[in-house]
Length: 499
Ligand code: HEM
Image (tube, rainbow, N blue to C red; front, top):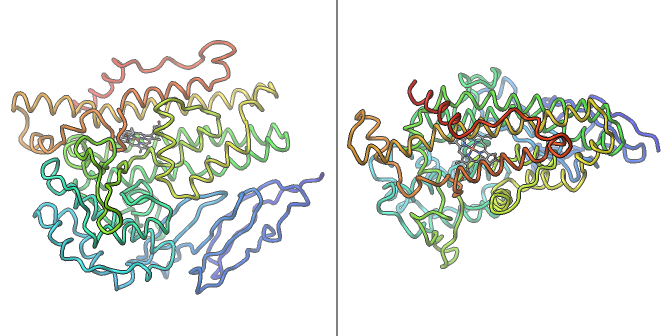
């Protein structure tokens, strides 16, 4: 059967603002009407000018909506990716005016926590209906606002005076909104990173200087740095995510050159993600991260501070348990793992699979579709093509490298401050400011990530499982440069610590 490269098709919304280009191979009998450069526009009223492009390789469909333009200056934009291309969504500056009681509180969470009055404000909050939230973007903004208020409410007093019940004014709308989005009623990566930014100058670049958060939590500039650097890591992942489709197409049509080219993009992408991750050092202070911010990202599953979970008043009487926000909920690395055939087993595999329940359903589905569509590793072995094998190996090596670098970051932001905290508590020495920040740190979370994992064993297992995917690992022995051993990691991390 013949096949055609649908090249550089342009997707535009009804106002002709969208300008996303892409290309894909399709069998001739599968070329959909809508891949010829036009898009099936949906009713503007109903779908808020989102359009749907039906496309077999996207497995379902993808949403395309408005892109930014100068006359929309000041509006919030969110970029997410799903299926084949990015979704651009222009956020309205605010939720509908009816939700002002939420936004008034959500915008002032750090101040209300510091004056110990957030819980009181939430008790006085009116019970709002959620049916006026109509579009995806309104629901996402509402989830963000409700999640920030919830984390503030739960952790207002740090690890002292933890609460057992989330009041109805918060729990009911949060559960309703979460249900409509297919997300859990807790703060997640898709809130604080993917739905929580705006450009200062809408025509300017995606850079730290030109980005700002919509909502924040205690921790000042370090919170901004933490969420925005993570966003830059997500953005760096985009070319590789888009190339996944080319890999799938290439494998399907036995096109070794196409698969090699696409894998080359994936490998460069993973390296760019690592470069973006390095910005963490510049923008996030470890003692603020460890001592102040971390607790507000923590959940109520596997958390000794809330062993019973949390009752969502008016929803159900039995407490519910949810993990806190973690970039383990980002779909980027999960996608590359599925593409390369990295197998995560045992408890680390179970944790990562559980984290998929904290992703947008479209992202989760995208990840699951990758593995059901292809076995890239078998294809590479079968083809025995030198360049293809080399590029595949490079992808695996870069993923290992990213995970090694991430371990260094975690050592600097969690392991070292945790041991410093112990030391400070024992000796009561240290700079006053550092003492203050670290004194607030929850002792119960010393060995755990915000997602609830036992950190280092988990991260190293995941890294080692990535290494095991290497083809030369099973044919010629390990070709990776040696891992940073614990001492090397600690040395690298202590260099940062003594900067
Ligand atoms: C200061 C910065 C960071 C710290 C302290 C940190 C900490 C952690 C911790 C403790 C875990 C274990 C899971 C949990 O319980 O939450 C984890 C997992 C993970 N983190 Fe981070 N993280 C940071 C930044 C990032 C960034 C920017 C990314 C990029 C998207 C990222 C990606 C991941 C992934 C994918 C996992 C799951 C394990 C894996 O697949 O290797 N992290 N992180």
